[in-house]
Image 1 (tube, helix red, strand yellow):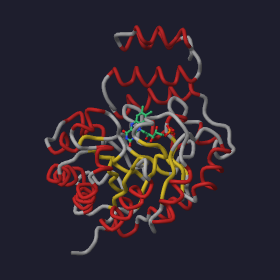
Image 2 (tube, rainbow, N blue to C red):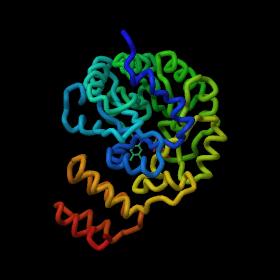
Image 3 (tube, helix red, strand yellow):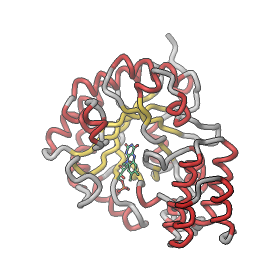
Image 4 (spheres, rainbow, N blue to C red):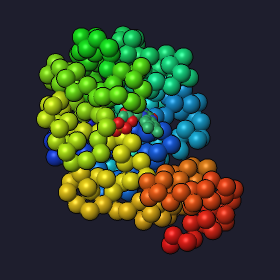
Length: 311
Ligand SMILES: Cc1cc2nc3c(=O)[nH]c(=O)nc-3n(C[C@H](O)[C@H](O)[C@H](O)COP(=O)(O)O)c2cc1C
């Protein structure tokens, strides 16, 4: 069988060399309108938020909407979480039909109890064989595959797992330089990321606590990674991507209004999501009073009224 064109021409390695700033997959944050804003500000690669493979396999509409994309939303990694091989295969086949993304990403880092109980997310760090099986299941659909992990307390286990994932066909590994126990706090372990990057021959993206140009330089220098992934720093503030490249970024309030326009244009979800995202931009802009008004808004009209003074 000839390979799909997308698989042949798309190279994650080349892409990361040219564009080393990556937007993290973030639940209820990294949706299509937000990704478009981050790309306009200089993000070279974006990921969708994590999407439940089981739900996609069942053709669940709201999960399918999380995979929403458009031609300018490229290059894009579509992140799935799950633990069952057959559901992963089915989800991959369903999604591949859309041709609206460039590669799959397997979530192996989510510390959420509900996800762990399914044996998915960070639980896969202890289920190496299953994780490799899931990578193969995704590859079987004809796209490239990356994985996103957290560190194991013993880095030798992380190294062994990453080598196995590479052998299973993963083309890139994002390492969030914290353990599951650390959740989102504590130091990022640059030394362990470096050891992983040295141990594999595929590109490694370093992730954790990037909020300035200095952070980008330090992280790349100390880890030897090909690129850095930005998470919380970009929430409510896509302009960070411009700042990380020495340019002035879009201000959070301006970004919020653009977000709302794009949200309407693409029909990206329900009112609740729009409101939550608006609050994130407002929080970044320290508009506390408006945040309170928006929190109380129960209709589109009330939201519009709450934001009117900022226009
Ligand atoms: C609100 C939120 C949602 C997240 N959702 C996901 C997700 O869907 N998939 C994933 O792999 N990681 C997720 N993460 C983790 C981030 O991708 C990233 O690994 C983590 O925030 C560390 O990067 P940072 O220090 O730059 O924030 C999420 C983090 C936050 C704060």
